Image (cartoon, rainbow, N blue to C red):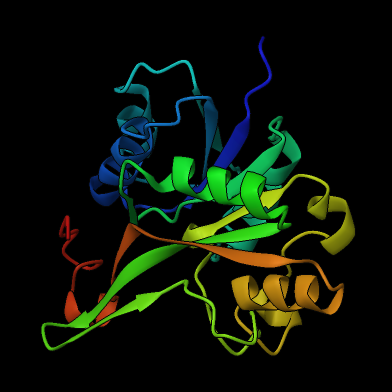
Length: 215
């Protein structure tokens, strides 16, 4: 089996209705040399069938036997299975634009950075829309929270930074904890400065989890 350039990890739990859009956004990427590892946290819905319905050999599915109740466990399982030179995450209810991987990878080649952030449109409400993933003039600081769906990083950081830690073992949410540990190791950061993702905050999707709303 050919080694992919980029390994993508999606942790999911009982969100098959939204997951199918996230997966399709990966399949629409202009950079096509990737593998997608979908790790289900012991889902009880039709997640396995939804993933299988794509019939795409680049997509692998793993169903965990026990529920972790958060994305750290599934993400760590996904990291163990990755084969690519570069690693990315896409959350199960986020959407990549078709240019996301290509823009991030091009930026990594141009800058030599260890971590590249794509720029996302973050919709908190109809009146509160902002961009996330751009770096301030002084460079990245961990107070600038950037969701994992924005990240592309070099494989060797898995060994340098380590696995994701549970929220139970950190003062921070797991994704912020991981990127803060990377920052302390003085890894280099860059931004593609290209809008390539869409985030819609769950606070404006009232009961979207309860009633399984697609968006």
